[in-house]
Image (cartoon, rainbow, N blue to C red):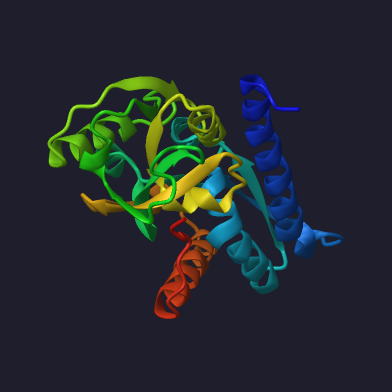
Length: 255
């Protein structure tokens, strides 16, 4: 028996949902049975939860017993809209596009290298590293501008650095959709390397050798909504990623 293309796509989503549910449950354990008088609303993209966000939630609650953090998974554009409308106190949206620095306070949390994402049955799946120029004849899957502003432009910049002009055949509006499109052979993709923390059946992550590009995963907030508790939470996330860097840990393991 074999899964159909639709079944493979559904499997990618199902594995991701189960994984994220388990991480969420672990992260929220310290909050069970405790009361809180204040709430801090934090938006996040799914790649940050199993890394620095889950750790920061545990540490922060140990230090601020009277404050509850409510986390809400949102795509980058949705987080920015929620910040503007006051529905979020803090956004963890990956790499912010340049215009956001005019309206929000920004602090870098983690530097994440980009990686090549290909299907596990691809001819290059056994490689440990790849130059982008080696994929000049491959169809590409990209992130959609609607949910990931600035990402298509970033991809275009990388293509220019590699002196290639490949065809983008599909645009994904979520991380799981991107993995599903690659797994079913629709094309290859360039994505943040920490995406490999999620279940990715049928997909291989390969280190991008040239050109090198690092995304700066950042925190955004409105200066007028800044509080000591908000800054404390941000500092905990930064300290966590600094510790991992000093110990030589990294979220990406080349396949």
